[in-house]
Image 1 (cartoon, each protein chain N blue to C red):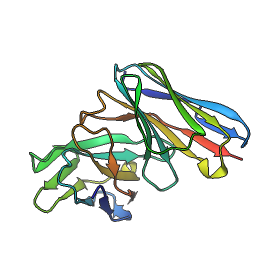
Image 2: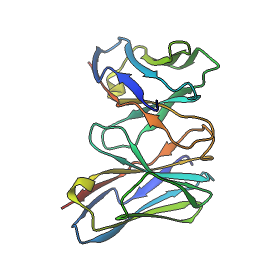
Image 3: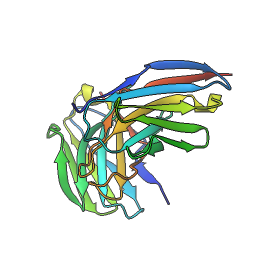
Image 4: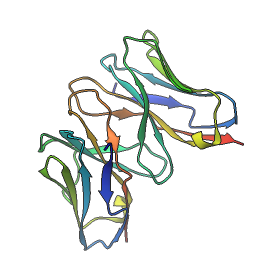
Length: 114
Length: 112
C-alpha cells in the first residue's frame, strides 16, 4: 500500500468555521508533511512531523494547527481562515524526515474559504 | 541560495516528440534531485530522481541528465504522449534536512 489518503477531497468553509483536514498512511513512514499549493504554483511546505513530533513549522499562521495523533495519522485543524487561504492542501509522507527518500503525496483537499 | 530555477514555464510538444525541461541550482549542498509529475486535481507523484554521483538515470521513456559542474539537471521525455500532459516540478534537497525546494513548474501539453 503506497497510498496517502486525504479527507475530505473538497471543503468549503466560512471565515468563522472550525474544520479539520485528515491524512492517513500505512507505509510505516515516520515523517509526515503538510503542504499548501496555490494554482499554478509549486507546493509550499507548512509543517513537518518526525516520529510524531513537530520538527518544522514554516512560520505558518496560528489559524492552522497541526496534530499528529499517531504514526499513521496527521490532522490539520483550521480556524478563522481568510479567503486567501483557499488552496489545495497536500499531505505527504516519507520514510524518514532527514533522509532523501521518496515523498508520497496524497490527492489533496481543495479548500475554499468564503 | 535555496532557489531552484526551472524552465520553460510551459511547453507544447507533438506526440512522439521529445520534451525537455531544465533546472538549475546554486546551492552545492543539494544532493538529491527528484522530478514530480502532477495532473490537475491530483497530488504530485515522484517520477524519477537522481543523486549527484551519477550523470544520467533512465526509467522507461524518462531520463534525468545531471551536470554537477554546471549545477544543472534536466528531464527528457522520449516519445511524448498525450497522457504525459501534466505539470512537472523539479526539486532538490539536502541530506539531513527534510525540506524539498521546488522549481516553479512546467506545464507540458502533448498535442495528438
